[in-house]
Length: 292
Ligand code: GUN
Image (cartoon, rainbow, N blue to C red):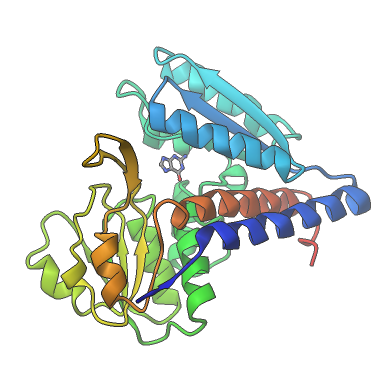
């Protein structure tokens, strides 16, 4: 049976560590990191994610600013809000929850955020810095995945890593991070041929597709480390609503060396990474070192 990689426990440790550093920042520099979250419209999943981000920001001792905008808000109204937050010295991190409604160009919105306040790491400058290996704000879900992998095995060098999903939010930045750890990286996607054979060669298998149980248990190489980024709501056989990942957990667990559960795997690490990024952004804007 695979070892469970406990994202919930690891995230709790990380949040504790961030809280302690926030306390030190307050005491030594009078600095309170602040995160502004923007939610446009009323997408159910986004509302849940944003609520959790806001609660955990406050619990870490940071200032949390919440901006809820109607689905019909214009792009220029949203850009005006971002301009005000860019100029606000109490706001060190700005996060615009995606997806945005179709009439708003997400690329323009993301790139209007000051790169040093872009705690999602989605701004073109941060994407570029990450790709050339320079210090930058790194997208939260890939950052959380790397911390989960490192908690399981410090040395990833030479491993075959297969990522299913090529999004800017997860797949592409995660590939860059794994490459920096000297993995041999394959990004698979919806047009990939013979996904099963590719997965069977993976020492590290990450799925970030968003389709329940798309990765079968027998696709997992014996002993592999499996990271499930998917969060999918399905109706169970008894008719109850249930959260499951992209991976057939019950089958994969019998073959894998280590595996993340859903829920309680990547999800909590994403928010803990957001808190880390907000702390880092606040410190770098004030030119103080992140407390040890
Ligand atoms: N929607 C899904 N994941 C994310 C994320 O990491 N950041 C933002 N802003 N929106 C998302």
